[in-house]
Image (cartoon, rainbow, N blue to C red; front, side):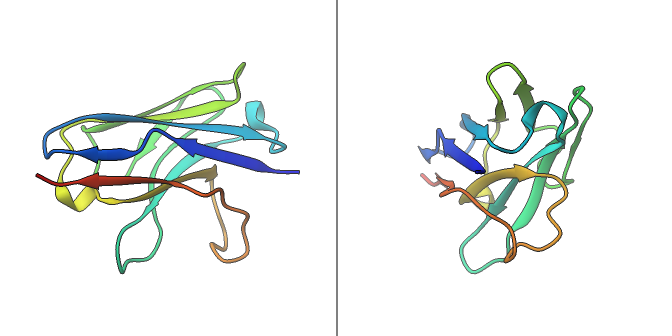
Length: 118
């Protein structure tokens, strides 16, 4: 049974930093490409960053140079270090395998809320 548990969100001022964590089970973590996704208010869920099983990474242009994805295969956990946060980064952040073919057809965890505001 797949379980994804995101944590680490919160309220942060513009320019601040947060690190998100996602503990995964039942997904074959160590051999999976994992991704972070987000859904802002009134927006569709979008891709943020992904990391292959051996550590190759790719980020969306909107977060490139600010967000860093990493993983610990022993702990089956994927991280998202977010720096220089902007108000437009406000969203609920989710982790999942990559790619996700159908958002509605896929299991998702509860996500973790990030609010960037002064």
